Amino acid sequence: MTFPHHPAAGAFDAVPPLDGELCRDEAALDAASTDFGGLVHERPAAVLKPGSAEDVATMVRYCRERGLHMAGRGQGHSTHGQAQVPSGLVIDLSTLNSVEIHDDTAIVQSGALWSALVRATLPVGLTPPVFTDYLELSIGGTLSAGGLGGQIGRYGAQGDNVLELQVVTGEGELTTCSPTVRPDLFRAVLGGLGQCGLITRATIPLVRAPRSVRLYTLTCPSVAALTAQQAELIGEGRFDYLVGQVQSPSGEGWTYVIEAAAYDATRADDARLTGDLEHLAVQAQDLPYFEFLDRIAPLVETLKSIGEWKRPHPWYDSLLPASSVDAVVTTTLASLKARALGASAVILLYPVLTEKCTTPLPVMPDEELAYLFSLLKTASPGADSPEEMVAANRAQYDATVDAGGHWYPIGSVPLSRADWVRHFGGFWDEFRAARRRYDPDGILTPGQHIF
Ligand SMILES: Cc1cc2nc3c(=O)[nH]c(=O)nc-3n(C[C@H](O)[C@H](O)[C@H](O)COP(=O)(O)OP(=O)(O)OC[C@H]3O[C@@H](n4cnc5c(N)ncnc54)[C@H](O)[C@@H]3O)c2cc1C
Image (cartoon, rainbow, N blue to C red; front, side, top):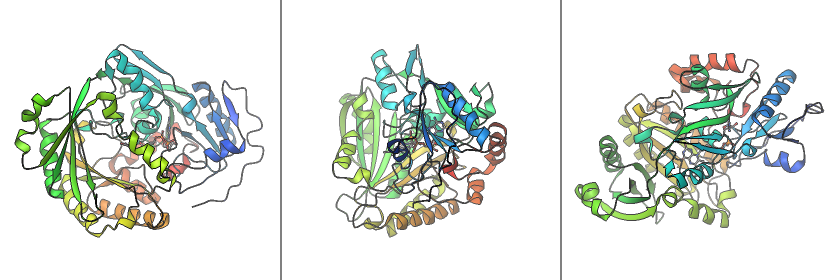
């Protein structure tokens, strides 16, 4: 989709002195007019590369006075224009990327990447507790979404592992919030999709880092076998990390794979960890911890080299309650054609213990056990068009909601205001109140299309 752009002439001519740079050159505007999804192209009038959090506050106040919209951008890895702003201001937070380690906490600026953070913590034997599959995402970007990963059964989401945030509100106030200081702001910003404030800094607790990881691959015969096995394993807390995928290696039929990792385990632990799983095909490998966390990096390089990384990515991500996951996944897979997914698609299916997710966002199904079910599509040559994939996402969204699930809002699904109100459910009133309080003129992050 391409939208017409009507740059606000002269809107950024009176900008006050900044520590960083306000860019209006074509290259900067082009870069801010796209994202990993490649589906939406909204051109801003300017891009701020802030030199400080104060720059962010200054420009929020500047935009507010002039009724201009604005959004933060981490790495632009959202897939439906969520960080784009037609004729407004994009704040490229990648320039705010410092990382400091103080004992067992990290204080990071929001534009820092998770890969940079863990590279800084490992030399002192520490690590953030939870990681997304891909480490080259910004800390502010994933905290604004939630940040789900295979450690969720032990620690919750990335957003559940934040001690304090520095935030610029939609009024241009640079402030801090935490579970005890301005908790309403804290609750509305973590997983809050940039609607109530822009995160400029986060304080993240660190835990002891393992040296190595023993990673088991367990192949299951069916969806039901995979989800039942995952439920058992996550309930017992047997592994430090647990994810799963549905694969189609030959292009015909499906294979159901669990990846389960034990930190600092060795071959001697196999009997304890997998001895009773002999009914499954079990493979094991040992990896250094960073290599384990970063293990999709070689795949990303391959996708870049064959052009798939640059193609449109109409992604769909959902959280399904345990009571309906088998039915939804089985029905979905039964009608899913290869062309509806593209050449390099990934289908994720893994369990989430909702009680570990203590922040209100992202919205979770109303059961103790839920499953992330993601259809990470690529509109490759010969596959369905991006528009067809987005339409299919919408149908999948409706099926998800009918089954008591929620979408995990990083993907490509056009939602109406009524959809959003239903999505936030019992948290909607609090979220809307926070928006009114902290962004009274509604200038922040229009690309989410919530308010
Ligand atoms: C290859 C790949 C793998 C992924 N794996 C996972 C995964 O395992 N788990 C998971 O949970 N997610 C995953 N994601 C999704 C990812 O977490 C989100 O899309 C995330 O928002 C992207 O971070 P970003 O820095 O690129 O954010 P952007 O795309 O730049 O921004 C996303 C949204 O957040 C807003 N935003 C960005 N920074 C800030 C800030 N500092 N303050 C306030 N608002 C801000 C933007 O305005 C926008 O609305 C993956 C995405 C990709 C492309």
